[in-house]
Image 1 (tube, helix red, strand yellow):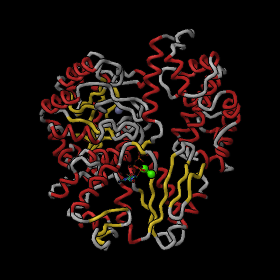
Image 2: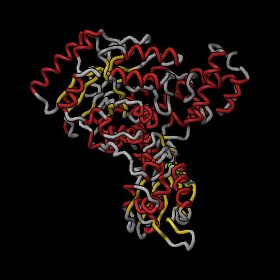
Image 3: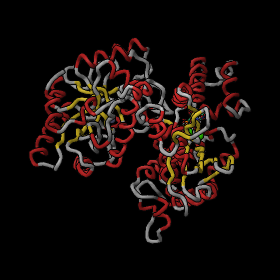
Image 4: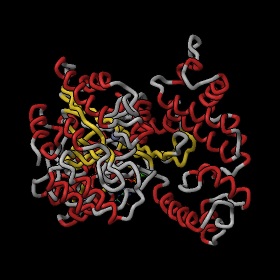
Length: 576
Ligand code: DGT
Ligand code: CA
Ligand code: CA
Ligand code: ZN
């Protein structure tokens, strides 16, 4: 069991305890424990198994919690959670995902109404039955109805990063089966969509079907949904991610990859194209209609080639012009991870990061980067101990000294400066002028009307020191929608002012998605791809930013941090 999963059980238990109105001190100890477990660099499960180690040595883990951890690792739950789940409907945890209620609100609702489903909660709001409860009103009913709609939209999808983890785990498992040659992910995961509905794995080899047996016997399978001759479906892990595994004969691998990678719209368009030239395409191959003879199917490139097309990178397969581009030989030469020469958004222990500047620099150097920008928060984020002007200026000076001594990587002094409610920057111009790279980000007051938010961002863009719009839409995947604003207008202004748009690679954000990246590029926007790392290991998230940039059709020249260090430094010097 991974630390993240253990932490999730603890969070849930704490939430249930809160619904039950239990002692707040105890609830806090569960939440502190969850934070400690989540952030711990080593696997807790490993420490628990090691007779020479004690989990109580981990700050935030006391004796009581240590027992709970052992229970969770053993059977994915704990007694307290089980008891609470008996008291409340199993959907209580679902209710917590509805914004606006909170554990106390849910407890109150359970006290007054015997409801157990989201549908019933919706009906209560529609029938105006929440407003009669203490501290609830018409406004809350509206808010709950809105979040129910959002919840329905996003439920059943998973973060790309989560699905990739499950895929990697299953691939490692199924590869061990004798007679299995390859296990390859297809579907939305291969196309790099920022969320994934289910996982599609394709298996080849003389004993490919043996992998299906191994799959349904896999310990983390929680429910087998179906088992056919060449396909098995099951739910894996406690999050309930569905995985479809298909065993393929080798001579159809290319056609199957093409088919199961999708997207559906792309496939429909490709098949239409095949039909026009007297061919038919299925997951078994490309065939001539007249005599059923096979034209292609072993490789994906072969399938595309036989249709008069260049091989299309999976990230582009959304039927948004990629087929025409492939036919005319004008597919973009997409940016790749190897093109990235530096990461321009990261935090340190000065604010809410978990590593020092030196540790972040060393991790970046080991990745082969030439430069980084350290961009801690500004003072408006008081909870994160954000920098005020004085600390910002001192930091700029410190970085100049660091570069004089040399860390084996060039460090740029930066800041992630809050864009205040009225669009002013959180720090005075004088301080911002000292720093090499100013990112402006919205972290508060996101519930504005679109017009007001647009004005706010326009004002921020008028700050002459601003170089990058950080996570420009504010979306948190499966959690918070983008804030409303006039995207085209802001992009046009950013282009005019020479402000770059950040593709925030954090797998929970990816808020400037492929479609928006492409739209912005068409208006002349330039981009940075950065991880917003709060820990050295987060630097690996650059991969999700790259995938998103590729879904936006970006080439290396569109991305500022593909520049070699000297050219990048020069680009920072010139204002638009
Ligand atoms: P997801 O799972 O919702 O994130 O998205 P996908 O794209 O992975 O969709 P999924 O798992 O339902 O199917 C995998 C691929 O199989 C899909 O991208 C294209 C192909 N496919 C599935 N159903 C159809 C269909 O009815 N027609 C065509 N042409 N292709 C299909
Ligand atoms: Ca899928
Ligand atoms: Ca599927
Ligand atoms: Zn940040």
